[in-house]
Length: 286
Length: 256
Image (cartoon, rainbow over all chains, first blue to last red; front, side, top):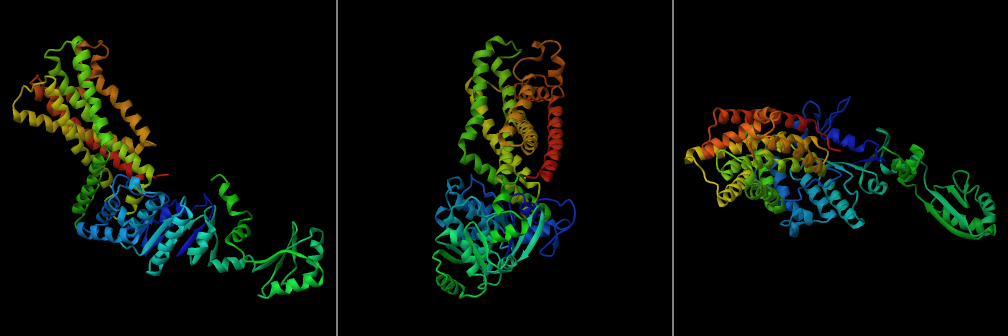
């Protein structure tokens, strides 16, 4: 699974729309599953499934009818379409709701049905454009589990998201996009390594001695401690750093308020790469 | 499956979907039969007495109102297409290995069945308020076929409007603003000779007048001259032109 991560307006959806033949690129070319999106769009469409930002399901049909319709449009035949629809409803925990009109479905159910529709023809390649935007936490986690199962089953997935934790949780490789350009690519761990390893963060009980604490910890880590707003931050690689720091500060007679090792998050990666936090970037006008 | 069979199968699947929608949203069907019914009652009982026509007014009116309501039948297509665009369903269709025009041909095809329902209701009410056919059954059936052809042609006008409008609400507004004057400045409700002299040429050359005169000829045996053939030609012409426009619009439409 490749995660395309970036703020709103970064160009993630545009990329997906070009790759799924919905949009013609102004310039350049792209190949999907070995087929050129401009010259062989029909072949591309046979290889892909798409679930977009909006649950693209017909509200006036029931769940089963929606999936059967998609099956028929993939030319699977009436009987095979019906069988596949039943299978998918079962897989996505919608079997009981299969005969209910979609307009009575909750947001999470619609998204699940939408994902099921993208899977009707068992496409080897799946495009998911912000599949969990607007879902509550429980529905997101349920959808993540379904995606895990798919990838385990051999489907290749391209996922776009503006949620760092989602890319971190799901994607094997992540491409960070900003202003239409990939600004970094790698596994979640590789990207995190780019912004440095773990850091030990200490807040002392008495703010007045923050400087002294930093001095005492000067030789502990891999680099010089940084002090920011009463927080001492030391780059470390050693797992025992916490115990060592506690001993050092104890000897120096400095009481500790709070101490923890912190792994960098993709938020840090984004901040490092673009000079601004993902949330700030998202608020920029597109 | 051959390309033609695929095209037909896709069209059929999407037409079925549109027809199901009618059953699921009965209020849509009510809106679309009740309004013409109101018109029938208004014109027969309120305005009718003040309008002088060469034949009994109810006989004059019903063919006109049947043609008028059938041209508006296609608005279901405009609403449906605009709605599909808004909800992102169009993206799904466009990402499937299906015929690209079936989304539109399926809709307009489905309109034929809803137009039939509407026609039955209209003629039923017409008979109830005193309308009587003056021609033989084959001619009447020919008239019904022509009415359905006219309805099909205007479905394509609405398909184009639905794909060109920014929202379902806008599609509705456009459709009515364009077609309403067209249907009123015609021989549908009053004889053209009763209009001011500057308006008469407009009404006389309005294709809608041709269509109404043709149906009147086929239903109540008024002299129709070449209007029957002209009406059929107009319908085919409108279907071809707006069909091309709608499919062109569909191909380049980019939601969001």
